[in-house]
Image 1 (cartoon, rainbow, N blue to C red):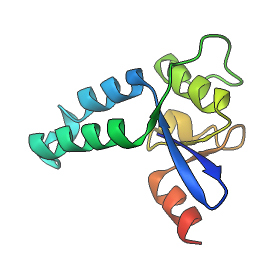
Image 2 (cartoon, rainbow, N blue to C red):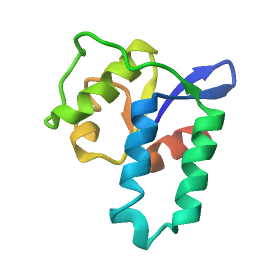
Image 3 (cartoon, helix red, strand yellow):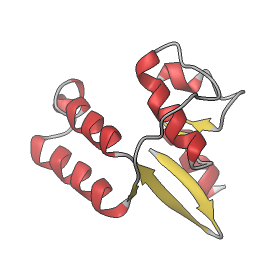
Image 4 (cartoon, rainbow, N blue to C red):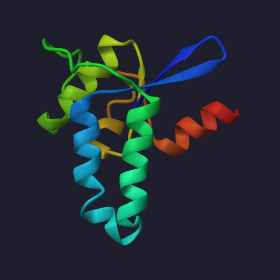
Length: 111
């Protein structure tokens, strides 16, 4: 997910590709922790509440060790947003792009 600070609130930004990826991810490894109905509700809630934008084409400012993550970097970069992810390939880029773990982002919000 991506968050861009606007005044004193944050805008949640996602792409359809990201929503599709989230739906697939919630269907397997996390299924033991998140029930099918809750997973579907989470994806629906994000789709309803996020600003859903197209994934931008073009070069990214940095590349992830996992090339499948580059579309997330492109999306965050195009919208001048922080990337919030638990993905280790993205988190190691924190010195190069604004990327936070979910816990780190929550701590940022709560000060």
